[in-house]
Length: 101
Image (cartoon, rainbow, N blue to C red; front, side, top):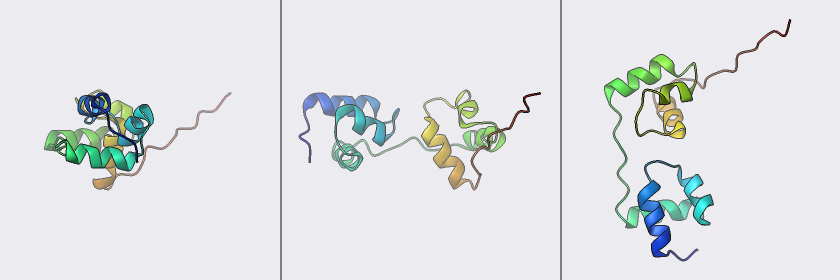
């Protein structure tokens, strides 16, 4: 287990709702599980609730791409959009093939 410094705690506070735990872990050199445990200890466990409007945006635009959804969803990450789409029973966007004629 890594030692948590005040700098790491502050980074976690500043970015917990913006970045994935995996990304935070990589940036501050800890394991993703440690990020979750520390966030809980610091009282950062609360995430933004999903609203009806956001669900509609995902249902409407997710097949294009998660990044397309992000244009209309403030404060969400691409990973969060994928996770919400999965909970809504939507499949991942598919790559479109283009003929090179």
